[in-house]
Length: 104
Image 1 (tube, rainbow, N blue to C red):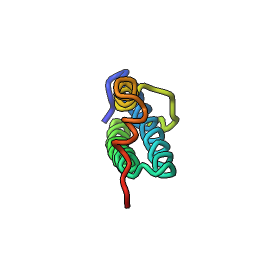
Image 2: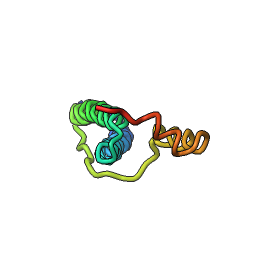
Image 3: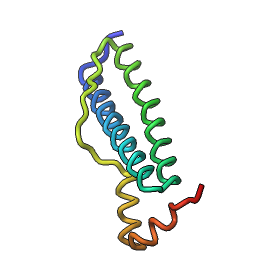
Image 4: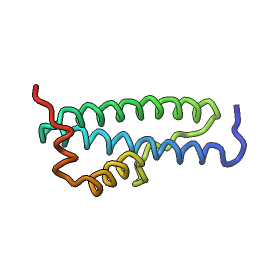
């Protein structure tokens, strides 16, 4: 099926956002794991996996429309990170991190 003009471009923009989020969440998960924040590690890893599923659906949809998925990453806004930064500003880094420490 051939997509209307501009549709594949919009889907590729969404795909870029998803790919960027995967990388950012994956990096954040690994950093949190190395710092001993198991709860944050699990949260970021789960988010990364969810983004991978979204990416798979977008790629399939673009291919269905006879488009070419653009799998290159670009920097973009990730709402969850901003929320975490706002929380840190509100409660302070020490209090924020203390809520994410778990003892195995």
